[in-house]
Image 1: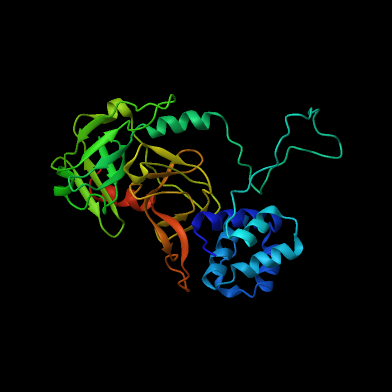
Image 2 (image 1 turned 45 degrees about the vertical axis):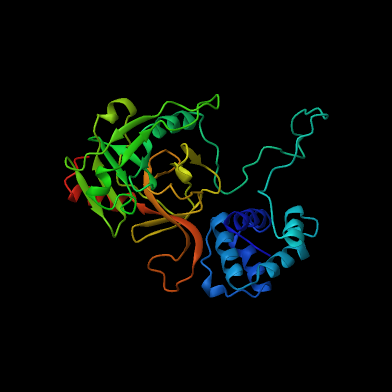
Length: 332
């Protein structure tokens, strides 16, 4: 039975609905005989179940978790699929039958519910603000043939990862493409290209995996910029990433976007990325930049006593990037 990151998340969603509290999850952990002391339990059911299932996968006991869930929820479609096929679709709400007239909820059955401990309802302006935040985010094309994502900040400065732009020479041969995306009609939007100017400004940090470089042509006047400020973030928060995955058109990741760890200048989350997404801004639900995305895969939590590995994505906390930029003389 092959389980990858997305299917683990989907299974976690199903189990979070069935066992939403930490106390509920303890019973499953005990029944599956998982090593409880190596699991970082969390009050967020999504994070909690992701951590439990990563431990179960590591110990080869995912089947035991599924079997116990089925023993108490034999008719659950998602657990049945997980047992029979080793896959599980994203958890969906009930179908709405078009042939049945709806007259509103009765006193016995309230249809409107919040599906978790925190409301995920957002003002419609969230979409408009997101469209504005997307404008100064672009694709970096390197002379070597590689690519990454970057974003503009005050002073016509581009921020990306150190491993995307390792030195001023790499920056001199790179090009920034803005507006590389699809229109609402599904057509290719006109791309605007800018050269980088490391002789005017260049700074980098290999330990914190960020680079900053000036851009010629005053792109901020046309495309705007992202504001950077120190910010607090905690596990359970939601983060969205605007990126150029695979070096393709600009996209945004909304699903499974839970923060799982914050500490030691690192932020880990479940939000989807691909190669080419390195250097993307990570936003909170208010579209504030909270991290600089830089890696993904099996990783441990910095500073943890036990080096347990989780399948996650990770960014550099924006507070660490800001400290470095200011030390380098950036006036933001």
